[in-house]
Length: 380
Image (cartoon, rainbow, N blue to C red; front, side, top):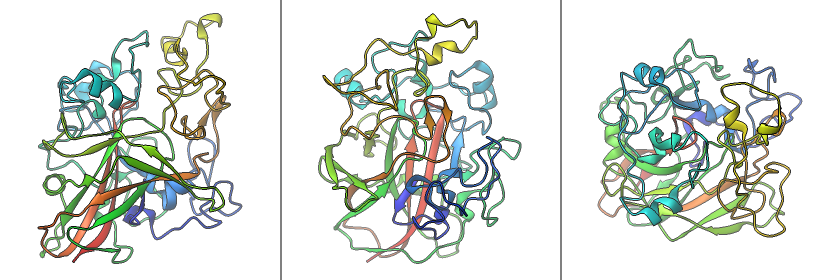
């Protein structure tokens, strides 16, 4: 979820004792169906349960999301439930194979037994999932799917399960950004799903009507510079600036700027719990998802307890990898990611002054999902 500016979906929560993973009296009281109970949603990547605002069953070039199911390998039934979706061919990289490869985040070299199965997922054609659909929610929906979907609703009852993030109440006026200035925004991962992200602005209407995806598409923001800062939540741990991979080709709206998620998942289709399953007695149809690729992407001497078999692409920093809270052996209580990713953005010179909402959009590559956070701010 977005960390700052503080999104409405964070419910005014900060990384205090109740929001840290392992809290004795956690803020999050979802009574989660995963068996982990209260406090499952925690840490900098899910402050105030902000990570529970997203949309599932979204595919490249399809206007409707199914809002149901989480199949790793998309099926014809999944596409039918997404209003008989017919995904478009990948546009990532704008037709330049080398640029596409550096932007890819999952099954980059086609090492999966299932072939190029991520080609229908949102990041393969950034910004096109949900296009031309007035019902697509630019601030996500509570729990990511329909009311019947198994994920729990947020602890806060300000928006009902499956309700739109645009209905969340304000949590303050937010920062003031000056036209033409360079500003900072940050996001953090609770559970990694690969892909990439963009920031967009929409001016608050005078009649108070809800913001729309179409409005945000009118003002995508450009990134400034070619670095992302890995800023740790523990002040004693110094920040690290890493090379950023950005693009403005093959994106929607045309020319909009997107940036690759720099945190690689583990080197199998599932992205965690990767093993040599050929040596195990299993006839499960889905066992391919656990099979480690034959490339580790580790530098000489590198190893990891989170991704013991390797990663999807080379790491920028050693502890920025994997899919916590999904760890070898199952899901842990809370995410191990203890950092946020800080980018510099350019505020357009000619924006009218006034109140705005900033939308952060994360298009995933491993799964057919789009995450969103929305924050209030003022342009002066």
